Structure formats: C-alpha cells, structure tokens
Image (cartoon, rainbow, N blue to C red; front, side):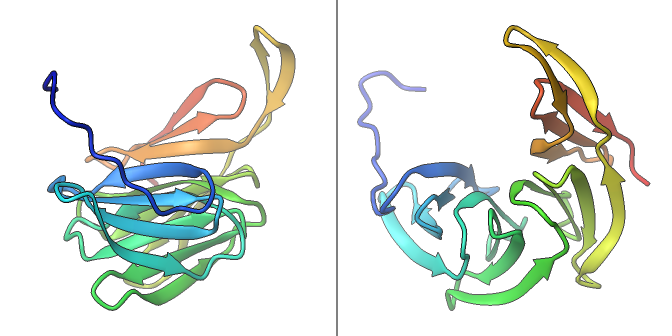
Amino acid sequence: WQQNRREGKLEGHMSWAVSCMFSRNGVLLCSGSKDRSVRVWDVPSSRQIVELWGHEGWVSQSCFTPSGDTVFSGSHDKTIRQWDLASGMEISTFTGHVGGIHGLALNQEGTLLSSTGWDGTVKLWSLRMRKVIHNLYLTPEIMLSTKGRGISHRGLGLAMSSTGEIAVAMSGGGIKVFEPP
C-alpha cells in the first residue's frame, strides 16, 4: 500500500454494496448490492464496465472465473447466475438452494463452483454439467459466543483451496473445513 496515493472511488450502486471481488489479474472488480445488481469495474480508471441485472433479491456475493470473462453472482432470490461480461447477458441460472445465497467460490481451474447460504447447505456444482454434484449439510451446532448461546448451521461465506477443501464461515462464529468428496 502506498501512502499519499489517491484512492479510487467506484460509484453507481443505488443501495449498499455488500460484496466485492477482484479478478485474478487485479484489473477488474465485481460488486454485488442490495439494489439487486452486479457491477463490474475497471479499477485503474475507476470506470464501470458493465451493469448486470436479473436477480430478484439482493446480490450477496459475486466472483470471476479464472479467465476473467465471466462472473457468477449469488442472491437472496436463491439463485446463482452466470454472466458473460462482453455482452452483459446472462448465460445460465443455477437453482437448488431453498434459502438466500451468501457465499460463492470457484476452484482454480474454473470447473467447480461451491455455494452456501441460509438453507444450511453447501453445494458443489459441475460447471460442465451445470448441476449439483455434491451436497454438504451443515449440521446445527450449539455455539457459544459473547452474545450467549445460539444454533448455527448457516453458511455466510466460503473459500475453496487449490486442493479442493472447502472452508465455510458459519453464522455462529465458527469455520468448518471439508475435504473434497
């Protein structure tokens, strides 16, 4: 980080921006918002490249494919959408969650997508087959926190390692790590 360097400000969402992620090369940034849009930005110029609309609920997460030409977005409308950045068009919609989606992660090759959310599941999707190939059920656990006891079984965010492990940030404050199926 450089001191005294001007910060870029990316403006355009009509409500809170709730997530953002850089492309692999760091030139582009995608953001999801409570206004139900995904926006893709050219970071060096602070310019919006494309605005993606189609979700019926707020967009809680988005991520780039390794090539950087496609974005996935997850929403409280319980869908994952795949977008072509060149055309700004939706390529496909993935359904299967019964609650809002809070986390998305792609493997390094861009062939598998994992998702988690309020329904207490983690789904592993084959992008080639465009379907769920594995479900993980987040079992309710009693979690102790500074706010007392609560039951946690909702995934809030996730990450996928280069070897296929999936880490899920849980609503009760813990993180669960799963090995590949």
